[in-house]
Each structure stands twice: as structure tokens, then as C-alpha cells.
Length: 113
Length: 108
Image 1 (cartoon, each protein chain N blue to C red):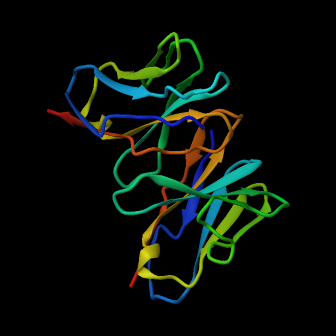
Image 2 (cartoon, rainbow over the protein chains, first blue to last red; image 1 turned 90 degrees about the horizontal axis):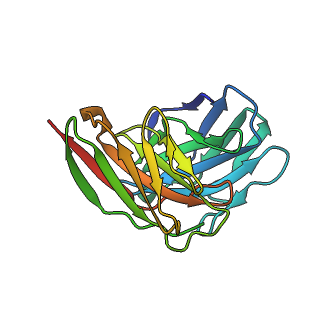
Image 3 (cartoon, chains in turn cyan, red; image 1 turned 120 degrees about the vertical axis):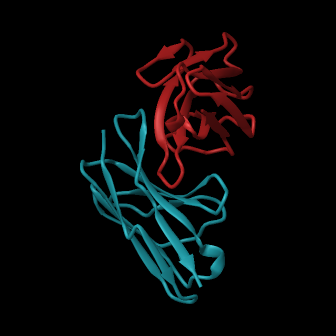
């Protein structure tokens, strides 16, 4: 199993600013995933973060808006840049262990005003 | 990843078995069927997965049809704490692609 800690758990930010979300895992993992969950919606994958290489972004998401760092096998950050109210969502970090089940953090609830 | 279709919502009485269906008619031979659930304000939680055979664990049972075009998640004795959104996912690559899921409400 894996225990994932996300920080912050929630934040209220001014439009035009940026927020960096941290994801810490209690074991080494190869791939980490970042998801967005807009109000009342399902989860949408933003990008896959591999240690030592550029993140792979899904269609509709770009590095300039959501830069990701993956400095080691237990940690990753997602930055939401130049925020607008449309970025208000829950952002979740996920890892997959042993090629089977995925584990998720509790999410970061972001409100942009 | 296979496209999955689930009912938008379902209700079940507490103590009864909850049977959640999922259609995945485009699933390929090497794609597993995964089930996750998301309780309000929490991250998704893994429930069970299978390829061809039926599977059972401490949380649920998974029944996959012989043609693998559909499956059913069974919660044998539903409790109020099982109220959640349940996601069925056909997964080949490591990333998970979530559909809209089924909002299951367990009623007292």
C-alpha cells in the first residue's frame, strides 16, 4: 500500500496568482499522476510525472499552466499558474503500486476568487 | 482504455446486496476491469479488479461476463458508509480514465 500526503488541503487564492500543491508518498514509486475534479464532475487526468523526465500532459492541459516537478521517487509538485475562477477544483495526486491498485491523496480543494 | 457505461444513480436498502452494473463492450483482451469508489470529500479508493475470472475480496465481489463486455460489482451487505460514487474503469495502460460513475445511495 501507499500513504499519500497532499498539502495544502484547501486554499482560497486571488485570480492571477499561482499555487503549488505538494504530494508526498511514503514509499518510492515510478509514476505519479495528477488529476483535477471540477465541482460535481468526475476526475480528469492532468499529467503523468516520472522521476528524471518531463511530465506527460493529457489533451487540454499544458505545461505553462500546470508545471510539474518530480525531483525524486517520493515527491511531486503541481503548480496552478495564473489562476482564474475556472481553476476552482479539487486537485488530486495518485500513485500506482505493484502495477495493480492506485492510491490517492485526499486532494487539495482550490477556490479562486 | 475502454469506454465504460454505468447508470447515473442507484439506491439500495441498508443490509441488502448492492449490485452495480457496468458495460465495457469495447474492452480489449489485455485490459483489466477496475472498480474504485469516492466517498464525499475524499480521494478515490480502490475496491477490486479482474481480467476474466470472478473475483472476491473483503470489500466486494466482481462478476465479469464470459464475453467480458460487462461486469457487476456486488457489495454483499451494504451499509450507510457505502454511500459513494462508484467508478468502473477499463484499464490497459497505467493511467486511470474515470467516467461519470454511479452515485450509490444506501438508505436506512
